[in-house]
Each structure stands twice: as structure tokens, then as C-alpha cells.
Length: 432
Figure 1 (tube, helix red, strand yellow):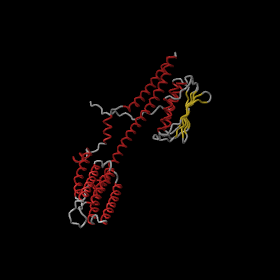
Figure 2 (cartoon, one colour):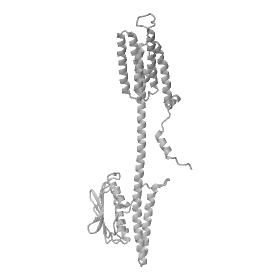
Figure 3 (tube, helix red, strand yellow):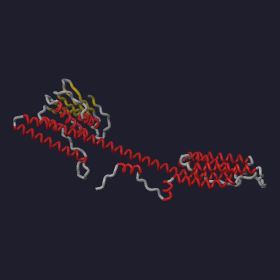
Figure 4 (cartoon, helix red, strand yellow):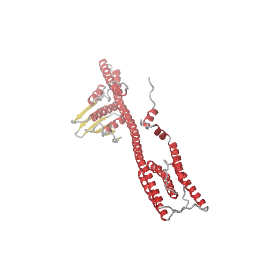
């Protein structure tokens, strides 16, 4: 026999959602090691972006003379400055997932610095950072950032061209080249980022559905436990009360015939309770036996009254009117009468009258149980009254229990005739 799976294993499977493996060995490696991927991308961009730093323009446009000794330190300073900007931008690529905007701004700064290179050139930084901005921030941020960056680059480039620092061809090539790289990165990033965010939303929704499923299962289990507890309480409480009364009567009477009838009635009551208990406990079986998923129909009011009368209690039943009622209301009526009579038998053993009245109207059903002879203080916090209140609330009815005029005790329930068994969830309105 295999051991049952632990709850932690089940939770782990639910958290993983049984997602398929990422296709391709390389893609799986990048997905598992994002830092390694970012470091390799940063090193590759550094190698491709440092080369233009050594091509600083040694002279003005159209000047073919060699640089003077005084200009050499300035050229070295420019080359070192561009190299520092490139190194800083490449270093930010390692954190491009967390800081996509900072990496993008650094890439734009590198593009501006390339304007001072003697030949038209460029690097992959704007392509990579545009992609990162679309994937790890948003598509809107990517398009806005790219538009602002290209506009700023064009303004600076043509300002330098007007100032004679660079040629028109260098300015145009710089702007067009960076625009093409940025568009390629943005288009790929928007596609990948949109798909990534869609998958994340689907996974988040799936996790939410799993949590809701577990919560619904727990609520259903709690409701089923409460239902079984109510049914078992009603069955056991009423049946044992009748059996005790019949047994005490049989033991007290000297008439053997009456004692025999009392013992027979006690056995009949016990068999009926056992049958209901078997049907109720059948829902807890784990095998494939064709057992019912709901308890048997409860004892009808006239049977409850007849059983109490056989036990020697002065119980009367009055039924007025006739109306079509739902199965849930019929079930609630039977259980309320059963529990009310049982409480009267238990707490008023010296009662001289226990009256049960069931009035049917087109809209409501009124159940009222009155008895005298209450001995001592009657508690109102037991499982019986709580179960009756829950039954009344299940069909959107009301329950009232408490002392009545003339030293009597009253139990009254007002139930709607057409309540549906699924009409639960209304607050319990019970007055003491």
C-alpha cells in the first residue's frame, strides 16, 4: 500500500501549476541563470562599444594636417571620457532588469558621446536598453523613452553640425543609425514584453483560482461537517429521549403488557435511529458503495408526535392549510418539530400539554410548539437551538425561542413556503 502524499507536495504542485518546460536547452539555461546572461551581454556590449572611443576626431572638418602637440592631451581626455561613459553604461546592463530606465539613459549618453568620433559609428547599447525598457518596464515607457532620446540626439547632433564641430553626414548617420537600433530593440522588446506580461497575468490568475478552489473546498467541507452535526444531533437527541422515556415507563409499570409495548416501541425507535445514522454516516465512506449522498428524509411531524405519545407525553398536533413547499422547507419543518418536541420532553418532564401547530399559508409556514412544566432554567446556547437557527436561516426563515405567557415555553419558526435549498447565507435572526 502506497503512503498518502503529503500536503506540502500538493501545494508545491499547485504553485508550479504544472507548467511545461521552456523549449530549448539554451533558453532554459538563460531562464535559470539570468545574472550570467546579463554579465555576458554587458561584456559583449563593452567590447563592441569601446572600439569607437579610440577614433576621436584629431582635427576640424576639412583639415588634413596632423594634430599638434597641444591638441594631443585634449584628444586623450576626450577618448578617456568616452571610455568611462561606455564602461558605466555597460556596467548598468548587469542591472538592466531592475533599472531599465537608468540603463537606457546611460545608453543615450553613449550615443551622444559617439558624435565626437571621427567616423560614423555606433554600438549595441541603445538596442539592448530599448529592449530591456519594453520588457521590464512597459511598452509605453519604451516608445516614449525612444522618442525623447532620438529627438534629443537629433537636436544635439545638428547643433554640433551648425557649430562646425561635426559634419552634416556624421550627424545624420548618428541619428539614423541610433534610430534603427532603437526601433529594432523596441519592436522585439514590445513583442517579448507583451507576451511575458500576458503569461504572468495568466499564471497569477491561475494561482488565484487555485487559492479560491482550496477556499471553496474548505468552506464546503465545513458546511458538510455542520450539516452532518445537525442531522446527527437531531437523530440521536430525539431518539434517545424517546427511548429513555419508554424504558423508564416500562421499568415503572407493573403491567407486563404495557411494559412489553413500551419495550417494543423503544426497539422500533432505536432501529429507526440506526437506519438514519447509517444513511448519514454513509457520506463519510471512502469506498465505492452506492450509498446516498444525503440523509434519509426526517421523521414527519405526525410520526414525531405519535412517538412522543407512545412514550407517555401529552403531545397534540394541529395542521392547518395546504401549500406547495420546497423539499428544503419540508426538511426544515420536520427537524424543527422533532427538535422542539424533544426539548419539551427533556426539559418539561411534568408537562401537562405540549401543543404542536403547523400553519400553511400561500407565502409562509408557521411552526409553533408550546409546552408548560418547564423545570429549572432552560439553556439557549445548546447545539439543538443553534442547529434549528441554522436550518431556518438556510431557507431564509426566522426562529424565536423563549418564555411565553402563563409560564409556558414557546418555540416558533416562520419559514417561506417557496424557499430554494440553495437560498443560504442570510443572517440568522434568533431572539431569546
